[in-house]
Image (cartoon, rainbow, N blue to C red; front, side, top):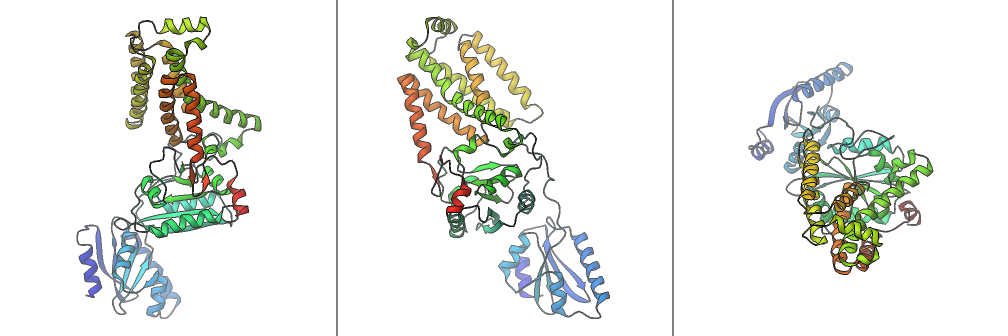
Length: 446
């Protein structure tokens, strides 16, 4: 047996799904090498034998070179290259007489789910397909949705201990090529960095993982990825991650969906305005309650002030402690709704919210008015586009609460200014987060 084959067997000796089988293709002895967990070996061998029998019947004789080119890509003897192809699910055919390897495409085992509706994003009057875990399928879905000659795809294999494929998609003529070159440069510079999640990807691209605002816009919907390509953004797919990562993520993406264009213009404007109102309510209303109850009650009319005071009668805690207590319970309920099984999650969280809300009010731990306010703000927070954006809004809400408890209404104003200044300071590869210029326009000028 060839020394390279022996080295290959030694390299995979701890993998029970590794196979090395002897066979004959056109009366030539070969070894078939691969992983049973990734390759449907029975169907692959049957398909190749039928293909070769048909080719031999059309030709009187086939040379070794012609036979190998028919089966796949001819490679030289390189142990690392062969092992990498095996891990990628390829079938390696070793021709013993000429001592050369062919990397062939086998019939794979189906290891990914079929196309399904989005599980984390709901869409009305739009495409119902979603991205899956397989990166090649995702690229195909994106090509189907954005059927244009301008679409470009750049692929990378990154990682040292665990190689993973990454695909970079952009529309030539729409995107600013300086942005694309920066991203490609980062991948090529840190090609040995392992990428298992978005934090690893952020570090590889040189983005701070400590930013409280998401640098990527994530979406399961091909329609949103296609719209991003049209507007000059870059779409990144990571193998085994079932959604697209869009760069750069801008402030306006928090309020806009491409699906909004399926409605008439007045309805689209109203929907987007509602999302803006929802963000403002989530940020300001809880802090405003604390400010008007604890610091600036004189701002209220006497009738409203008396109603608020009556609702807090018997509550032993300051307004800040009261609202933090309920907010903590709401955060626990929302986190539990993510972790619980779908069959019981909605029931448990709804019953838990009702029981806890009624019990806390009956025990005079919080006021009735506060329950109404926080229920409204929790609903308003869900109007934001993108789950990661809603998390950022929930975080900023606590900053305004603390400032409102100390400085009242002026503290809310100061907090809004601080948040606006922080958002204005953010940028992704030199593109400001608060930019209102279409990326397509930047690409045309670039």
